[in-house]
Length: 200
Image (cartoon, rainbow, N blue to C red; front, top):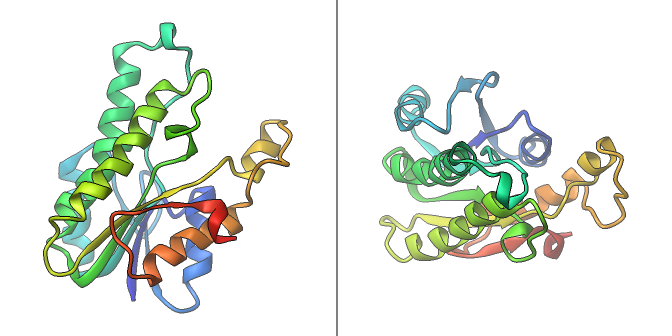
């Protein structure tokens, strides 16, 4: 398959690209690097990306910006970033991408454990993650041409936890996290949230 990975140079995205590259053709996309540039916060940029790469068989997003901050310190810009980039950016990959994907193709978006297991400071991330899961569940009912859409819900990645000086025992490596994305691409499910620990 010809697979577009948005966020392919990030920690999870790189692991997903490594896991899929042996059997599939990978096109990497990122804000500042990759085979093609894209700004998830701009629908026009997403449209330009798809025009540049042509038809693909699958789209994976491991990208999307949203920040941690205490609830009473969140300003409008923090909400706008999470909702405009992590949420609508990934939704727009499906809205725009459905015209540039093969019959039976799939979209795999990234939500996260904070939708169902929030922590202090995670308000805007939890909102975006929960909305992405609901979007996939609902959009799967209406996509044409046997197109599929799912979300992957990663837990904290060990490598990130170690970089932050955190105890990484509860985390999952990027390579193990990537297995859920492979399952979404190579499976037949749609409208589902794939919890990364279930695929190790």
